[in-house]
Length: 453
Ligand code: NDP
Image 1 (tube, rainbow, N blue to C red):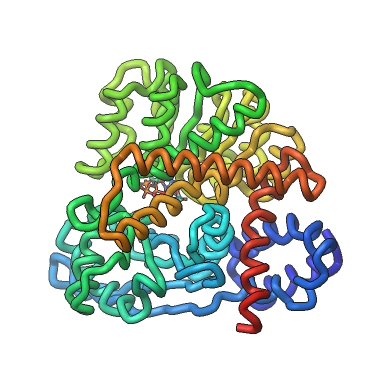
Image 2: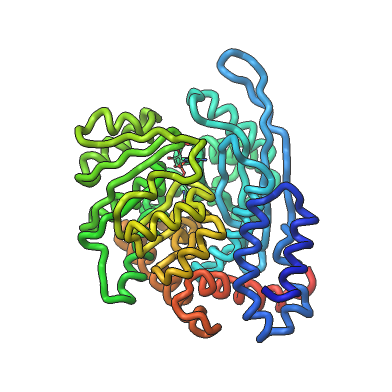
């Protein structure tokens, strides 16, 4: 790492204390950009890096709401409008008790590069709240969403900032948020993506992140003349991304053997079939139950509860070929990465955002496996959100086949950009450098064109 980049990182840490996830995301990106800055001194002169790590705007607000017992509750709401060099801010909303400013800044920062890679005109943003939808009634979730949107609606719009879902924000929440936006602004617009099909949503949007992450893995395997057929796969999480990752793996003839939630994970050596996946979808999306029930229903399945005392996650210690981390940030640490490699994993495609710690990433790069970092591998979700915006603007919906075909092409293009950029800057096969550089160049050049704003 050059002195220039080290100094920049030091400034970021000093200026943004207590935001370790944001520091981590910035470090991973700027480490890749050293080789670019050497060839492009004009970016240094224009202080592009110093500007790109500073959000254009941060909005923080109170979200008061009343629970079913008539008691007043207060949460904190956020929207980080990170970078609008190539389009309106775009990125999800996360409702989870762990949400804070640093986590949303890391997600917004990643989003800027990811959106640039999709080839679509979208800037980067992220938002959410420390509200926990788990265990809340539908009415409580609705009251919270209405209060959250009462403030957020002043700051967003179809040409300004277009939020979507993320952890804890699925179809139900997007519905309540959209309803309140429409009521307050008196306009029906494509201000959110992930909408219901009857009111402006796109086919394939729910599937897009999981399908995209599998398409990306397939592209990486193709560089070695291989396919996913017959491969054994570890998948973490059991939410939106994990469910559709497993669905696409089944369709392509691979065998997924794990799923998890924050309470524990299941290992199903026989493989998760279409029927079993249907059970998971009903369990998680309708009944909002725990993954443990899977092991209670199907014989031969082992359930392991989460043990926070352990220095590793046992889900990553099974023999397999591919891993699809699809739960949350830093779910694979250095030791987990070592365990994955020792168990024969040679493909990692990240469905979750920044699921691997910096030392874990280094382990994968040193081992020379096919490692697809999140901002490339999980870009399918936001890409189809971009396609939802296009359909809303045209006021014409596309068919399932049309959207899926566009998604596949976008994942192919992102993969090619990563391969080309890694090679052009002297690190062939390094998808981390490829994704960071590919995403960065378009943003940097746009910022240069638009002057000091
Ligand atoms: P969901 O809320 O649908 O599912 C999240 C899953 O991860 C649940 O199984 C949840 O378990 C588990 N999980 C969440 N937090 C933790 C934690 N701290 N420890 C252990 N398990 C946890 O979210 P998504 O599937 O939408 O998102 C998953 C990941 O994918 C996130 O990193 C998100 O940022 C990323 N992503 C999502 C996109 C999308 O389109 N939805 C797009 C791109 C990236 P539990 O129910 O017990 O909390």
